[in-house]
Image 1: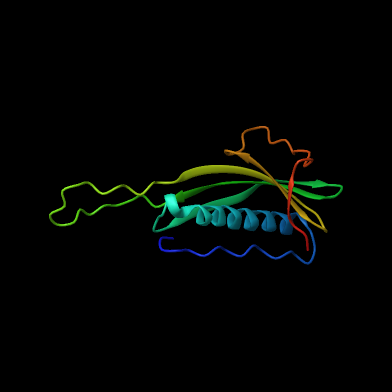
Image 2: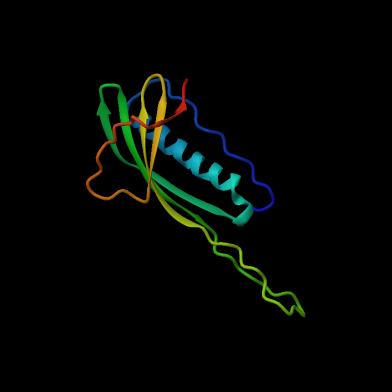
Length: 139
């Protein structure tokens, strides 16, 4: 990640919308979104590697498509330091990044919408209204 990482491409749209394909699109989109957000603001938190774990926590069939709850975490590698020979000061540590996330997606035949909620889901996982959702993909 250090030294100018490039953004990841977002996933394509599936040929047909099923519970499985909606879950796959939502997880792939959120993984790309989190990585790209990290890369865009990595100047203050440069790291050698980044680990993103995401999965569909729940998929609900709606009249207009599928609501998919995606949760996971994003973590940077812990910094390691080797003091230069003869160094008189301690190097500035590379910030360690560790965050959990929870996001709902509405995947329908004509668009994908996203509502970010913050930390991981807790019970119960109520499907949001998507009234204030951001449209993130239109095929």
